[in-house]
Image (tube, rainbow, N blue to C red):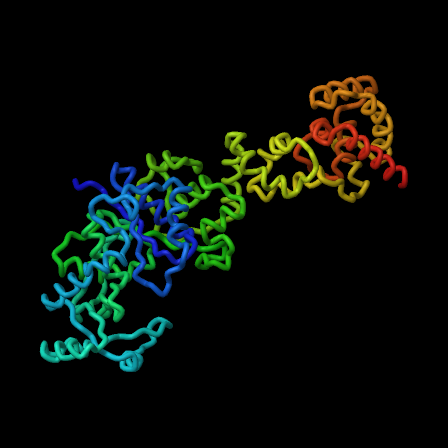
Length: 484
């Protein structure tokens, strides 16, 4: 069996869409699962859509996600160049287009824009040009005369108009189309650049690509690719068309969603490993009943035959949960390095930020969640004294006031404000008074935070705030309760 070779062939047109990332991931996993080669090819023949900096985005995204290519523009494996504009400059595509012309499988087309406009038809709600093969019937002499005169032209594929074309897809099986539906697609544009469809086939063959992964929106183009392979007498690669990714409303995931690209998700506080893990499950079902996979585990488990046909729903709730699982399992030093900028956006005081990070590590799903957990450390919020009453702790405003008054001198006398020392002293206080732990800790925590929910218990908060600030907040709590 031939060595498996796959390629990711993005266009440098901006941020990497989640769908493109999934294509890159599946392409990588297929190659690596089989011990094959993963190739990066840049498809930049559509010069109008090219964006400065987009190539750097592609490299950075692949690096961050761990999808390291074996060959590419920066790693020559002997079948370069790996950038289509450079291949085009060598006359590569034109050579193969002219071969097709000589075989009678393609022809020069000199039709004007006006003539093409006149042939527009509405098919399935879209306006398309159904070309009538007008220029196919030009004689060799007429063609040469127009070429010598410098008339602009494109080169079109001469598609059959009768019979059918059948192609096989690993996911969708055999699909047959009527040849009359196959338009004479353009191979070489008037600017001399190849079209996406043509360059794809040439490059895949010359680079020895065995498996082609792409979105199912390209299913309708597969018969055209097969016609090209057959015209050249080349072996057709395995096709793997992936299902559409939709939002929660089952509409195509768009830029307006705010999370359609890898960069969007990273900016929103997701970690790369969680994004890769989640994207892998957008259309693929593992054999095992599990959801958390490292990239290495995905390589081991990935079977492309388990890719689904039905659309995959991008569920932000699920992704947030998964990201939270990754944060919980993350090495603390790395977590702190990533969390610190978010903490510093909130905390300007000289507090122990590492201790604050420890408090939130298992409580957040994405890094921006940190703010809502720790804002009280920076400033005690205005709060309603009804929070002091807690049914489970069996506290009331009145009991809370009593406890705070009783515990204040204890905390004033306490010199060691480490968590362990504070916890030990308050347990002594609880025992002395015959109270239950929560009966004492709840009022203290409420006075310190002014919040119903906090990322840590009373003594941990006391430790981080320090003696002076802690006492000030408890006195403030007493004052508020006395005003009732």
